[in-house]
Amino acid sequence: MVSADSRPAEGYSYGKVYLVGAGPGDPGLFTLRGKGLLECADVVIHDALVSAPILAMVNPQAVVLDAGKRRGRHSLGQDEINHLIIDQAQEHAVVVRLKGGDPFVFGRGGEEMAALVAAGIEVEVVPGITAGVAVPAYAGIPVTHRSQSSSVTFVTGHEAAGKYRPRVNWRALAQGSETIVVYMGIHNLGTITAELLAAELSPETPVALIRWGTYPQQETLIGTLATIVVQVAETGFEAPAIAVIGQVVSWHEVFSHCRPTGTIWP
Image (tube, rainbow, N blue to C red):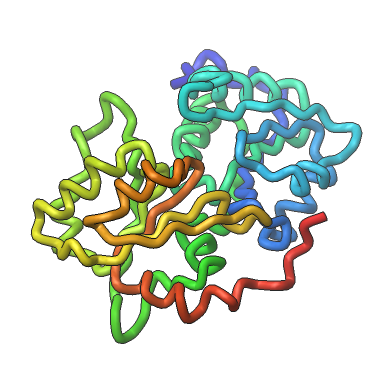
């Protein structure tokens, strides 16, 4: 947390930071508000999974900084990113922190906003479409359905060390939610499926793994709780991907041909 000593002196004004959600990748899903901010930004600090067509919208005169974190290849720690954003706001009027998906859905936007507020820097959040809704939709999977799922839970499969509690209670989720959408869960998929099976969720429960969701190279692997881990090993299926667990996955066969066609990928 930034100390009160880092607040601006009286009569001195910092720039403003915008925490902008870039959505899941397809530039057609990026908000008009976000596009307008990229076009007038002095600095853009972006995540690893922000797609190239969205980065192409950035003001050509802007400073563009890559702060992306990927498993095993972190360019900057979160504290370093917080300080980088603060430093840029002390020098520039319009700073865009461009984050994949939505800043407040497993995007650490809350941490970055807290650091900025503590430093006395004006900040505004611009929501984005989160992968947990958009990616299943592009795979023909509705996360809720009146006859199959009246509840959906979004959960991270890659928890931070030293967090407020030791782990997600997968067994409680198995009994409490009809659809479970797991972000960043590929590397812990064996543990997740074992926990759900131990909670007496049926081994035949459908599972969809969707990688590079909303990108032209989107891939979907369909299985069940009993088979999906073996399928991943056999096919070499890798992150970045989300998992959808529940009966709504069965709609993939019916709706997969209905993928949106109004995309504007170059």
